[in-house]
Length: 625
Image (cartoon, rainbow, N blue to C red; front, side):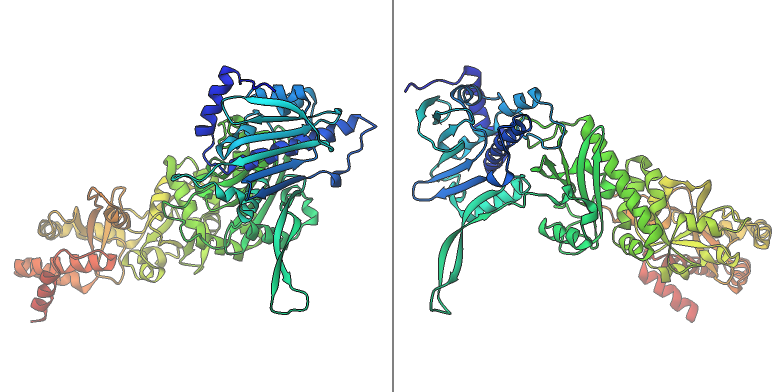
């Protein structure tokens, strides 16, 4: 028996792969099980064209056995096996894939896909093993052979005895080191968890002898352990079953089994596509927000499978950020993977799947809004903010996708309404979609700025999320109707107050100029109000930054002290205005006092901090005495 050397390129690849290609050592078990599944698939395809060969699926299996005493882990399969030449070619030349060659020689169109692509997965065993032994007997061979290697030094092949067709792979597991623990790959619970994680949906049973407990004969309180062969994997994935055979409970159980959340899914989406690219997907819209949703620790993405084998726990490229709350999985046979099968090549197939998934989620949400309004409102109260972030992000490029899904609290309906519903109720003479911003609905209802709009019978949308105004600024309009804040300079409402205010502003220009001088640096202007009815004063804004936007921006770290251009508006029909005029004619110090009081009063109404509370309280005392 002579030791043979790997080709020079293969030797370097093996050394590199053992140390760097795979990010997690546990991947080796996924790769070996996938190879065993390939070997059984090859018998299946042979049986399609060979009448003498019968394929009884129940006769084919993969078995995993661990022996702590000898530190060996053995994987056995009843697949097609390998001849001596195949051992030489497939295991002697790294990155030559027997499965890939088989796929090219046989057109595979029935969805029974061969997993292997690169022929390197087998060598991942050297990440955890000092010695790898392969004992195999091919379907058409009388002889069996043993291939053995300790890694990059080379390998041996010799003829041995083996009664059954198939392959055994025996790993001599490494001893623990200061940096690495290898004992776990001999532990029953660990092996089961790796199989469930990566290979749960391999189509053939993966068996293990599992330790169980049972009462001792003749005793009620004493138990004994025994070994029982169990099938570890589920085999038939939910997404490959007929939708008509599945119930809501089936999907809910899958949601719980996959640990997508502790809640129940609000809605599920089952997708099966067999076109330019083939894939299946099951997506869930959760009922509750994950506790870490708005933290750095939260990872968006869907589980990604290739032919039932888990490739990525979180494939972020499959979901846009604004749908990052969606949980679920995608399984495709057509993905281009890199050599380790851990990372996707960014290709056309992936983009097509992501685009289709985005449209399916949007369609499901639209159906929920139309047919199950109560459920949609519950969803929106939980995740509506994320949709608004989607409208605002990336310079508004997704606003067309999301605008019909948005909801806001209505002054008229006293509940959440869509923009389409608002438009339908607009009177013919209404020019704009009006909104008002504040911390709560109750506070917004009391804002002086809403009086004019409400008196005209116009509906106001209440913005209470910090993202609302930013999103609306990006949206600009909806169905050719522009958005207008009730605090903006021009409300676009024809009213008697408008002409009266313009007339009074001209007559009292010196008064307003004096007040503006008193508030220099605090407001851009002081003027007669066209919007106030019963309230004496309010603050409106000019420009793109509103009061609420100023609050949000100031609360951000490293803020640049961005401020709204504030305008102090005075109600010329209020008794306070007469006091201001009298003070202007008789006592400028009193006018200064009144001006500061009104300004601070307007700040309090807006929920803005008063610059000097002590001065404010002293001013109140001066008025009282």
